[in-house]
Length: 313
View 1: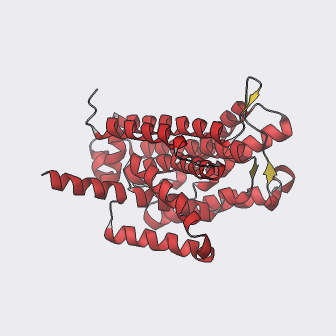
View 2: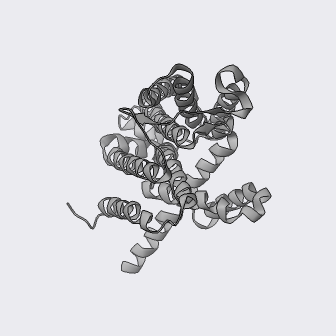
View 3: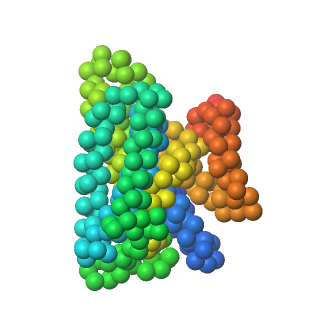
């Protein structure tokens, strides 16, 4: 194993950060922030496969996050399902729904695709808000704790390791996918759909495949969030959350798995640093996105990596 490769070095660096952080976190508030970073990073890794590697925008991915969260809440609280079973059911439902949606919506391009995914996310958010008897409506609903073999997961420290391991597994899976023939096909679709089809790549198949994959990852993260937080609202599936996720991907670096993690970390911590200017939070997100697209079009991590590469040369 070559430790000098960006892939192996990045995995070791991320594992080291996850292992060392508990020694530096003074109280449960900081644990909570780091756990939210991990959950957002998991969603962004999947979204980055769609946006960064395949070049297909989605402005409604928080909808899949919300479906996963509500499946865990509804099946667990109302029907007594085990947490793991409800997570799998949510992921299976999201896979089916996203597959049905992706068939027509992935035929769109550019701003038409953006508007299509935006509408999809808004519809999901409206359904979760209006179906009050099932979802609790705008007020939200409680979610039972995550139990495994009769043992319930409680406390920030326990959830820190659950989310940390989940993040490492998601990064590893994403890196393997990117380095596989499927990953090369996705990058060819991003480069030129016409050229990819000329070379024999089944463009519609791969676009649907990556859309479903990213949606299932978002559903899994939503279920984790629901069981950790213990309470969910339709805001988790809202438009603002979708925009935050896209901003994280763009800031960290599109077509960079570790960039998605960095972007999630920065934009999860940033609101905590801007609590005094809470009314201008979305303005700050917009400014960051515009500034990144102007001055760091490749995103933070790829830009820094390129700078270090130039210095070595």
